[in-house]
Length: 425
Image (cartoon, rainbow, N blue to C red):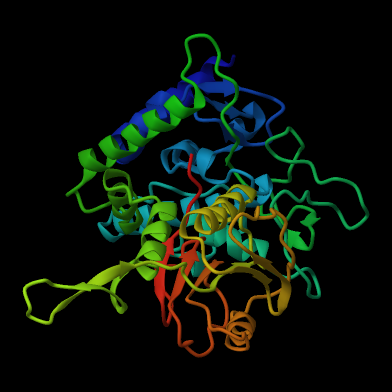
């Protein structure tokens, strides 16, 4: 190991502590391992593997940028938030979010007449930091990237797909050791150009003796994040997104499946009915006691937006909730609809049936076809539950209750109620 290289690394770690202390605890947790097979830098939450050749090309303050960029991946949960997704695309989405946050840090410091704490390596404008993603979370950025059209139209990269060059050869992943260019754009992946990266992430490797397992590692990093925000809060130099992330960790939301079940139970609640009367009271008053009348809930429709980047795990969870509704609430019939810009699949289930796990459709997005199909049914749905990323044409509000189960960061709809979906552990 070069003594001068190690000395530069130690000096960069000290600069983090003195200039951007928010990242200091994270930097202290990640030892650096020199690795010639890594084009730039990469972390699995236990260490940073860093290309010596890339390290030597960087200016002193750029080393701070790379260190803090790498720390952000486990600190913001990127190692655990993209299960089942296209890995290269997830790295791009995470890089947009991280780099925009670092630029926000820089803007605050520069506004105080201080030096930019996070200069980007050259070429500075080539890295993922699209301003239109400001304020977006990583999942929403991923969904947008995945749905970008191919060169002259068509669909973007879908979860699990591997990028290919136009000539057919595989595009080597930065994480897997392939040499990704550090200047300019790399080969197009299904029509989407991969931006160069000066730091990536990969899933935690198998724990070695004495190391935490992946679940413990995730919990440890959440603790580091909370401590880092708490230590720097009030100094006026933290991006607003960190407060939102902290609130989410300290006040975790009720899991969305339970919210969905509560909503469905309210829609199907038993009620007192005078349609079937119990015997009159024997006091001669003439009053009768209403009976507690229960009958199966009417038709329930579950619609799935099959245009976006919904993960396999989230789709399985949603299918499980369809089965739960069928078994527990026993609607007179349950209709499942898969829709992108048109209805691609419709199935009808009855109590006792098993819900099939396949889906159909990968086009654009519109909710209007589902609403029109529901309006054309011989009996209007008692309720409609729609799984979607929320990026589509909502159309007119229908005359029945709608619950939007939204993933990818969207949390608003022009009508109906919304619960935010995420994959459970």
